[in-house]
Image 1 (cartoon, rainbow, N blue to C red):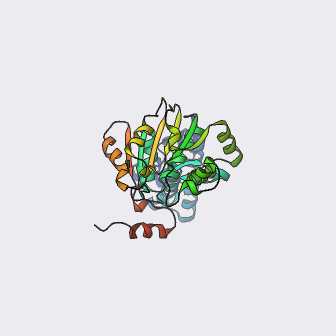
Image 2: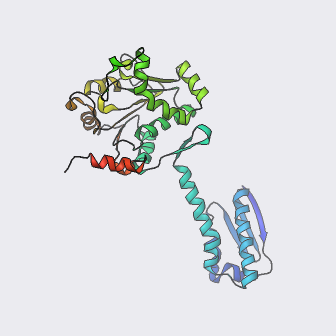
Image 3: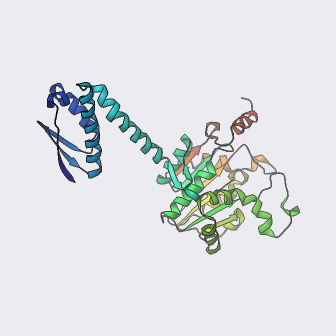
Length: 314
């Protein structure tokens, strides 16, 4: 902590401090991290050098106002001190939504209320369900949380998985080996990772297993320790598959399940286990459920209208 004495000149202290010190107390309240004591023409300030410099700079500006106008009123302090204080607070709040800085300094933040809930819940729960419509940022936010955990060394690897269920296509008719057949289904996960991890580093992570992207069937029999594991498109899994996935959880692991119950591609929609599993587990301690809706849609504005058009009539 630093102590500094600021001497004011060219003004009667009463003009600066106000009747019964009301103006001075108003100023001091805007700097809660500082201890400020006024004695005549001397103001003793105790705090960090940066905070003291900020206070002194604004105090000098206030004295300039007095020199020009011959008086100081509360509105002068508001416009000079509090408006700047409010801008600083707004900047801090904006920064608090940032999850991480991605490729080329890209700012990746929680942009909606439910995205913010997902971020907050991630800190307190080991298993999370995020269910809601297309374009609401469920998967993107989940992957951002996983990458941040990897960068902060909270986990040692990221595992992203999806069920290999066709959305109108058939895997068997696609050209290439199994990896080439499956990669199109996993491409959205690659796209999100490229926003957050530089290309060469991502390739290294994939080669050494730090980042793994695989179909859900490849999860069977594994125990996943010290990992952030994301199951995407979970509406296309059965209750049995979801049970298999959840029981892969090892020590120091975080599991996130994302899906949209309105986009089931299974032959029988009733086979989807997503909503059944959420209803079964939502009250268990350590599990969080975040339900996204059309207000969270952050893609093109038309996406929201498309989602609304396909909603069943109530």
